[in-house]
Length: 60
Length: 148
Image (cartoon, rainbow over all chains, first blue to last red):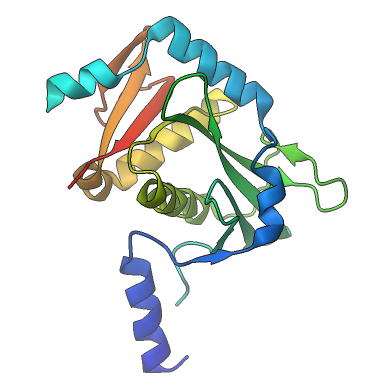
């Protein structure tokens, strides 16, 4: 691998927001819940424990 | 030298992401999805393997592809991309098993110095949310992008 390529990879590794390639074939999943058990768990947790918005407000 | 994370593809709404894990057990396609919950601006984060034949998802399978850190870095990158598009989003995450939840905790801890600058991070323990502290075995996590 050339030095220029290594530098490019180092630069890419530093980026927080990644370069995302848009692939419209993935749009079909947007209205499909792929992990229904996890979603149910999240909804139940937020219902019983409450939403953390209030804690964030206090921390500000 | 290689990228510390996998290349990400996403649908145009940046709700569903795909990447391919590479390791001794081959190339394994994985999907990350941010799903709306019953609460406004709140999303559940989940990811798992996509069966290339059936298209079905599996978030319990253990790939043993020797790349868990690279996968975690990829999921963190997806959270950055998602919250760039949806800056008001609250993202809820828990593992499909206790071991996976610990992996999430280790991931947050590993990137702590970086992510604490950009996100509010809370852990859920004993039925309450607490500001995240390294070393505590939380049951779930919520992150919210700081508006810097």
